[in-house]
Image 1 (cartoon, rainbow, N blue to C red):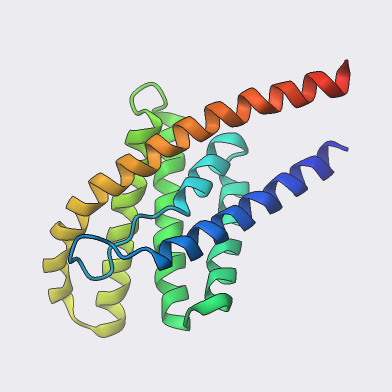
Image 2 (spheres, rainbow, N blue to C red):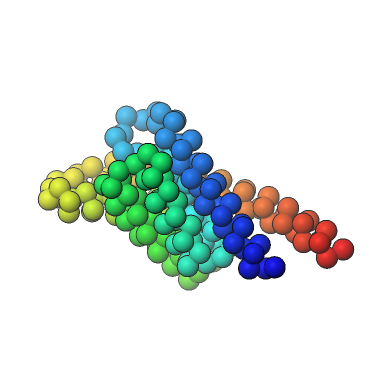
Length: 175
């Protein structure tokens, strides 16, 4: 029963991440920074990482990237998305599990946002063979501070509500 519950919950996480991705694509970003996004789907990645761990976080992130590409992306968007998600997940994992007492979820999310930006600029530079793109990195890193803060704060509150409600569900089943 526990494996089934985990599988269902992970499917809900993937679908939530996909829904957030679609919603985010409909929101015009107020700052005139091409390529900058809020990163709402990263809420789900960080949540999965903190609840289940790296392997499950990677599974959810990859499924979300592939499904988002199938809905309305391109092969190049998949490459950028997967590279950003992977580096972001690795650094968030290291920060969460090895320096948990140093960084809050907000700090971990900011690390993830900055890693995501770094990975995407690096991949774009390699693909386009234009290392001048790194000039744009400080702008993305600045935006990443704000978006990472928002994603981390959102994840913190969602995790609190989720655990409160999951405990209620577990008590109902056992009682």
